[in-house]
Length: 226
Image 1 (cartoon, rainbow, N blue to C red):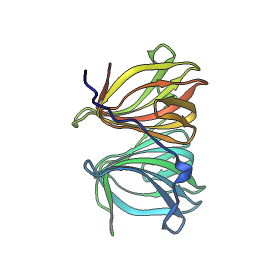
Image 2 (image 1 turned 90 degrees about the horizontal axis):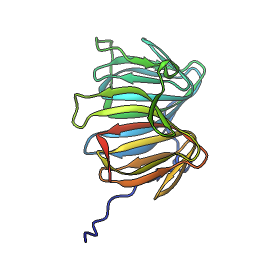
Image 3 (image 1 turned 90 degrees about the vertical axis):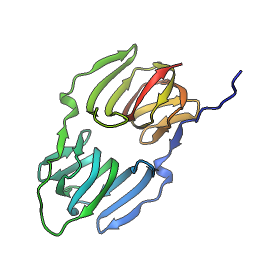
Image 4 (image 1 turned 180 degrees about the horizontal axis):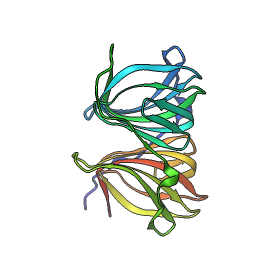
């Protein structure tokens, strides 16, 4: 019988991570990084009136606004909603009343001295997206997907009813989740509100939710039952 072990998910307690000053009025927490694919997760807190100067995205970025609102030349992303900055997007970012955001980036950003053309950022108003029944006790909102990459990528909001369970499955590709509300758990332990869980490629686990949960998931690849 094979005794090969599969990797466990990793619980990331954001309160344990230190804020780092990035520029006046802007602090950040480096949450997670995958150097091989140039992917990373960062939480940023922008003070009222602070601004990120003109820059270009080299790679893309998904942002979830936890509190406050974030604006650029293409619109405003308010609390509980998401924005997407495609590769080549050029913009400035401001938060007149302050904001706390979670960003999942592939690549980096580079400062610009003068404006150049590039694709617009996009805003996803989550309240306008329909709930889709994914399985008993679990429904989803499909926010964004990219089927052109290898692996494919997507971002979803999942809502678990109290007692809901995801049966044992394997991650073919990896996944980051941020718990917006409630808590869920797997073999690594509970992931509570405001914290994150990383499910690496090959992770096999069962997800349970005692009292219900709402989570943001960014997925690379897929899952398969075991």
